Image 1: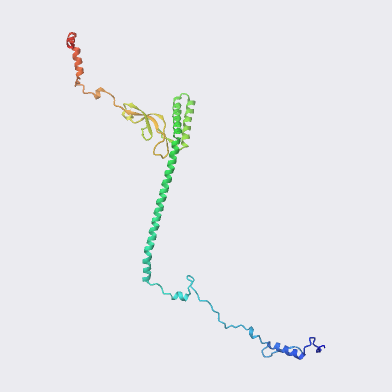
Image 2 (image 1 turned 120 degrees about the vertical axis):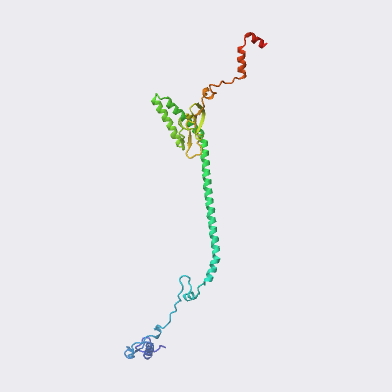
Length: 290
């Protein structure tokens, strides 16, 4: 069987029932629908009433955290309530800390002293090693330096011996200067031994002594056989200059060293016997001999 459908309502609902449903739905908002015209009725007392559930409670109290100290993070109330240490407590703490701080300071001073001593020892050792290395190199090259010094002396003598030939003298002099420049590359310099200069045992080596009767010339250099060379700042020269030195010798003068002229010298026994033998005659001499 087909169900009966109310005319004018496509879904078949009862118009009266539908109007009641709309009225109940609109009751919460204060709006009523006119069942006759389908228009909502507005409450004339206060207009549309808002939903009570949408209202915001303005009286709710917001809890804020207590203020804290920025340095320690402790609440200000607790920080301000902490009592300050007394003078006696501060003095006791200072008395306990003072020896500890003094010990730390003394340990630091001892550490600095040890460090300074070790640094000085390291520098001295480094200087000693460098000195030994230099001495080793110099000893290895000493034969070469001696040969160059000998050539230097020969070139100087050749330059002095060719005074008439100026060209040859200039060439030998240039050769001697070149040798000096070569030795200077190895930090060797001349001791500047010159004729007439004072003899110095630290710089010169006396090859021969030349006797002189002039006392003022004693100890003077008579001739330079080979120039000396040494390292700058060294305690001893590497190659002492070979020189001849004047030595004072008193003159053998009888009038000065002998007895006075009015006193006859005493005769020796041999002289007296010779004089007596010479005064004998040949016959006496034969008899004396027999």
